[in-house]
Image (cartoon, rainbow, N blue to C red; front, side, top):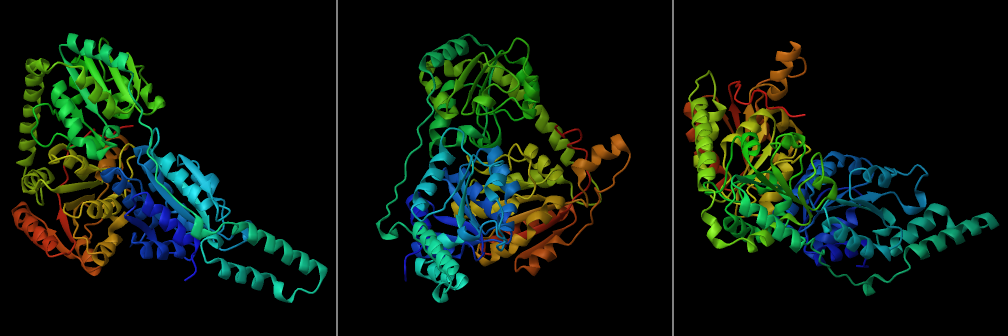
Length: 581
């Protein structure tokens, strides 16, 4: 068959290490999807465009390789806005390709025509548009470069439909649409001449001669003199604390190097975002609870890839006498709300590794008393959680469930968090077993990431057991993707914490405003919904059923089927007062 623009797109994606694209089909993008399939790039079709973006986001986070979502024109593009903004806030490197109306019909009332560029520019690092076949390769190569450099983030590339189909077919379309073959009047002939010139310009390059090559992003290196200064500060510190954010995990293949550097530094560490699980379950340096108290007591805080946003109480969580060292790829985030005493506009991973090289091995045994104090506080909090797990009610105690699930999970499990109160409880009670085994939306707090993240995680790590932890509110956003899991043979296990309400909102709303309006749901049969899509569904209504349900779910997934556990949970005040603004 005649080479077309879709084939060229697939060629570029393959050259940049893209193994799969996530999409919901549409006529505007059909040549890209067919081209990808023929080029050996897997096409994973979903039931909602937002899911396609969430899946690409997850793959990018886990592999470090920018992944791609492809959506059709108009509403296909607009349906991605929330998911793209989430990826932007999470600083995930990915590319979104959006279809568009034919170049000649822009602004003339064509099907699904819109000015997508200005809209998407508000939520992406860059919005690019292609107007000639000569520009397809350069636009995509530019997109892959932009998405990774500096602060990573999504890039949007608009691809008009007439640049994607075979040239001979497009010329035939335009000739038929304008009546060029039967042009008789001077005006008709001039119009035909103009259209021929327009199409000649569109297809001015020979696709067979176009080459593509991937390029590497330049690293943001830390200032070596400042690194030595921080090493001196660390030498003088008596109670240092380190906070690692998602930026420290932008090179997943170097997670082992990062762990080795942290071991060398021997500083007690809190892990947030994509850094959760980096140190496994029981590492001597990892502290999980009472972060605010520890940061108040610390005399030196090192923040790597984490801004002083609401999670850090806008910087107020730090003690007055606390010295702050921060490393961040974003200059804005580096100075957000609190100016560091020493600031590194650099890659956090490279900063930590450089700092470790400046630290003597003998210092590994320093701060033992400080670490022991933080570990004792951690142990006290764990005992309080155990007490919550012992509370009885008419249905399932969510804290007890997560205690049991934590013991049940293997070292090869990826947890996807999508919800409010139920998921916040999970975050306090579950311990990811290793690096890149916890996925949550990130700082934007988006609901609906569950199925997309699980889809991407399962395909990026086909050896992993993937669990989605859904609140019953958030489950409705993506439960239809159980169909996608079934069709693509992805045996995800989903747990819906079903307490018939938007509990995280209802708790404070009722207490402060005296009304639960718009927060009440039903004890819906989510397991039956899953069964309707061909998955296995399990309902659990008591603590005594938990163990058997977990075993059944794992057996079902092992047989290749996705599974959904509809977990009827008791209302709990375990996370009372947890909402952040």
